Amino acid sequence: MKLKILRTLIEKGAAAAIVKLSGVSLTFLFLLYAARTSSTEDYGKFASILSLATIFGYVLAFGHHITILRFWPSIDELRGRETANAALRHTFKIILRICIGWLVLGVIVSFSGLKVGDFDNRALVFWFFLLSAAFALSEFSIGALRSQESIFLALFPREIGWRILSIAMVFASTIIFTTTNLPAITAIALLLVTVIQAIIILRKTNTSKKTKLEKSIKTDISRAGWGLWIGSVVDPISAHSATVIVAIVLGAPTAGAFFAADKIAKLLALALMGVNLVISPLIARNYYSQNLQEVRLLTLFGCLISVIAAGVGFLIYLYFGKFALSLFNPEYVEYYKILIVLSLGQIVNCACGPVGTLVQMAGYQNLYATISTITSLVGLLLLFLLTNWYGTLGAAVASAATLSVWNLAMLSTAYLKILKSRT
Image (cartoon, rainbow, N blue to C red; front, top):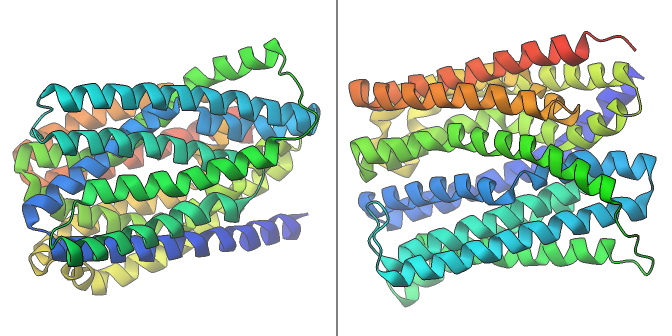
């Protein structure tokens, strides 16, 4: 059984990691080209908008990108495929209504002349609203396809399609208009590939025999959704707020450099991303089928794969980190220490493995949300203070420390509540 589980993780995880690696490579190509064709001020604003839109995208998803990932496999296992598909359609309608309402608000704010922070450009404000809505729909679509173990269909449109389309649009924009609107391009490109994913999901679930979803299941989804929503919102706040706070405290150009270092550091978690993409439905299916030993093995192998890959990547950064930063901008080389500090946080993240996913999939979403909220609030305060006192190095230390504490708290929770339990 151990070899079978390890083989499943390696094969499916490798496939997911390859798509993620391709997506990351294209992302870097896009970000590099964007940095080279933009001023440091414009690139810093774009980095801030992208980070903020990512956070709001998770807010708009309302936790249902994780809710469906947890409920679809278990409902499919216990109640049948038609009921599982009915649950998916139910959550999709909720997300769609939220996003439409958000876009209406975006149009009102954009054309009212209201200044939002430092962005008094109406177009920039609108593209922020569109990008965050597109991101919410994209996250749900990925979660829905992952729940059915359709890893390729879940990842390829955004990881590959979005990046290629964005690069092509930036290239065309620089030729036709000599300038480029990065927020607009990323928003439009993401919306286009997400619409394709949504069509695929609807075709997969739109069968001739449609089961009406029971009220009890709707209630269960709604109750779980609140805890999953809080956790899913708090996590990206911790992950992306550093760039936004650096922009507020130190300015857009510095935020652009910090953004580059942060993106490079997060490459170390690529194997962990692949593991999480594969392991979520497997944990949900096995945990609710009382196969706890298999859950333990999935978690253990996930930790080993993640930390080994991250360790190798960290050694590479020690020698080639400055070169990686210089690809964005030669001036970014001075942020090498920032890259190393952020990378140390990712090492801890990968060493703990998929424990956060395990806690959520096992039904402890409220505890997950509590831990995430406390660590994020303390982390944000620490981030703001250290950024003011020590600049980007303080921001990096705060980010790495918050990520490490969160992982250790989740690891303790997973061990005490799940892994230590006896079948």
